[in-house]
Picture (cartoon, rainbow, N blue to C red):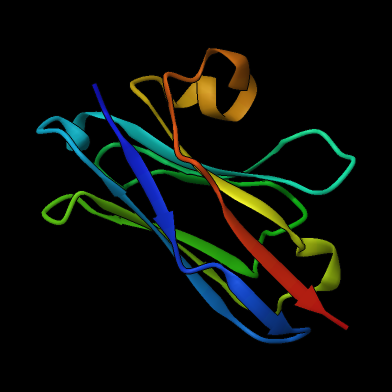
Length: 125
């Protein structure tokens, strides 16, 4: 069992930066691919970024590529999402996710094993 707790959300002006954190419980954190999703009001939840268990492979949605960076610290059981050059359209609830299969995070979110409770990110224009 893995429990995920996100933090770091808030209100920021367009062009600003935020760093989200997701702390995971459990001894097997390093065995899981970790990802971030987001859901804007009235829209479906969408994939943002994923990082492999070892941190060597990362993949991003086109909408955030070049602006967001996902990273992880397995010693701290934590995954991060550094968000730069934020835009109003980045406003959403951001969710952390974990699964042993990174492909489920990128292409089959209904099958993802574990989810956090979400953290609100609001970007003002």
